[in-house]
Length: 149
Image 1 (cartoon, one colour):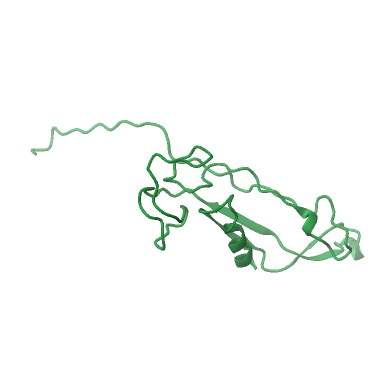
Image 2 (tube, one colour):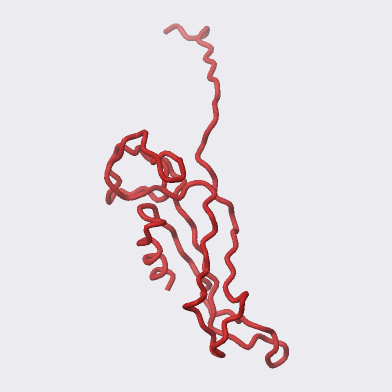
């Protein structure tokens, strides 16, 4: 199920302590070469999976990130506000913030009913590129002429 895949992915050291959300097509889709009856696929039983890296929400890194987990951040103890992830982004953001590299499809554990897994049987694509946290500079100008205080 999508929940099983989500739980397994969230245990990976490359994702934890942030999280991903997983969904999949509700019905099985036909995959494989279109050389079956009427030009239809010869394979059935596949799913299309969507994995979303939820890491783009800011939260004070010096606060404990426990059961009050904010979706889009990470779970764990407090850290110094200057701490960063391996990517260089501050730990105020989730671990996988930014445009993360594509996940890989390791198809050696996948099979088809014919036993032959096609070279293009598992395709990874990016639907929406990740975004970096807010950055840059701005100026604020306050006009206090009309205020008696």
